[in-house]
Image (cartoon, rainbow over all chains, first blue to last red; front, side, top):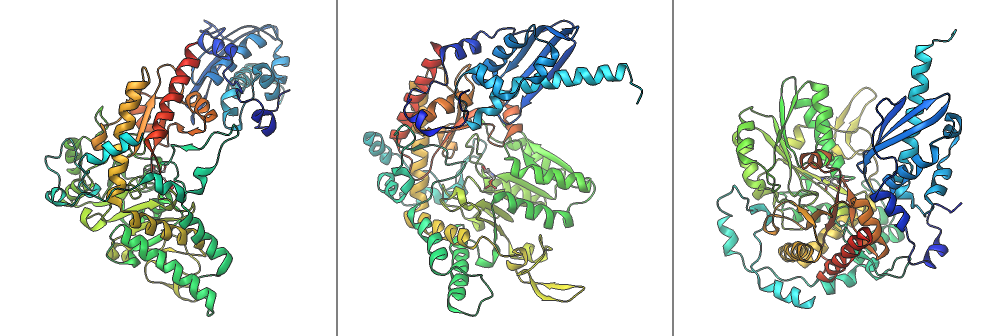
Amino acid sequence: MKSSAYSGAERILDPMDDLYRDYILEHYRRPHNFGVLDTPTASYEGSNPLCGDRITMMLGVSDGVVRDVAFTGRGCAISQASASLLTDEIKGKTVEEVEKMTPDDLLDLIGIDISPARLKCALLSLDTVAHALADMASKQDGAEPGPG
Amino acid sequence: MADTATHAAESSPAPAMTHATHAATPAASPSASARPAPARIDPYRLRTDFPILATANRFGKPLIYLDSAATSLKPRAVIDAVDAYNAEYSSNIHRGIYEIAERATAAYEAARASIARLINAREAAEIVFVRNATEAINLVAYSWGRRNIGRGDTIVLTEMEHHANLVPWQVLVQEKDGDLEFVPITDDGLLQLEVYEALLHLRPKLVAFTHVSNMLGTINPVRELTEMAHAAGALVLIDGAQAVPHAPVDVQAIGADFYVFSGHKMLGPTGSGALWGRRELLEAMPPFMAGGDMIREVHLRRSDWNEIPYKFEAGTPDISAQIGMGAAAEYLMGIGLDGVQAHEQELTRYAMETLRREVPGVEIYGPEAEARGGVVSFNLPGIHPHDVAQILDRSGICIRAGHHCTMPLHERFDLAATARASFNVYSIPGEIDALAVGLREVVRIFGR
Ligand SMILES: Cc1ncc(COP(=O)(O)O)c(C=O)c1O
């Protein structure tokens, strides 16, 4: 995967270091899966108060599979494009697969060099999905209390 | 560029900040017109004093630093003062009976005297050294606040405060069961003085406000606000973090009770700052932190406090930083703060005109240039300020993007974040032109 920090030489050789490649801007301008689900099984609103980025993720899960996903939000191009790319990626995956996704997986998906200061923006979408799934799991635990 | 700078020289000087005019203030101080025109500062010459301005970014672009409101650059005189302490007379103060320790003590106290002169304090003992403006406000909130604010007592703040002049008061009134009230602001970013007047009928114990807003740039009419507060029986704390390095400040003329500022925003080192307080108030206040240096006599079960300002300076301070802050004060007084103010006001006007003319759709927040310090916050339609800052960074242009520690103020304007360009003595019109070109590039990238 691409290194996420400023890896000096590589960037100096690449003065156009195009953080804002066309496909990123395209995802920002016309995000995929942007909207709401009527009856989400999992939803969560995540935010980076420092930047004012905000994302609400809604998942429709059945039989352990993410069958539907939608998000709304506002914020920088990186955070919103990341959410758009992530929703494409997780649709059809099992909850287990989604839970296993790492920040590096998402950064690979985004495919551009993210400076340390922007990591929070890039990773907000994944963080929000993880919270939504964790909420769902804890609610299910509550509904069917185990022996403990 | 030079054209603009020359042209700027012909316009009339701004009144000193102690006499800042305000929409609701009918007249500036009578003395303002009698003032001689301020000596011009020459930012092009001053730039050679700042070694960092000779550096370039990873693409070889020269540094265009437009984030001085966050922290200022440091001139050679300050760097040298810090280095000299570390290289030549590194030793603790107020203790050693040997040459370098005496030199360190003398330099530290000379810095205090310089800073007292910078804001025209009556005496150096009224200057308490702290790490920054935030610590100064916390000192007052803990020491004065805990003793003087009780159940049902009111503190009046404004909607434009930096979190540093908000959160310490929240903590205090939560602990003491007091109340906070806020002076609202107009859409132009000016305080609503009629509401302020009404709030003063609540007989607040303290009124605390910023001298210059770090987001809107608004210069508040501090003298008038202070007089009104005093007439209502309140003490006044002024957050001067964005004022001290940009215009002449005279705490006696303002008549305030406490005035706080940070060294690192006035060309000094990080880790340096000052609280000014009137002697009687400081003397009546209990210490903030306890330990060495703040005591006169220590017994096992009790101690006697030292005199001011040492009562508030427990432990070994950041000696070199405070010495550097003193050097910064001397540097600023040397170039003349009237000239600094005139320069920054011209630059601010130039920035607002240039951005409005060159950058389609740009929205600028806050009052017109006459009523503001060297701060211009703005947004480009549909583009998040972080993206703006990131793209400008490629061209070596440093601006701030975010809420600038003024979340309630951003909420007031229904903004998630803004981009901000801010200036200091070394800022020049060419940097603003570069900003405008950069912003057009941002618009182009996002519009493609
Ligand atoms: C108006 C104002 N007050 C207070 C502060 C806090 O300064 P410091 O972080 O140096 O304590 C700032 C810094 O941004 C400021 O702009």
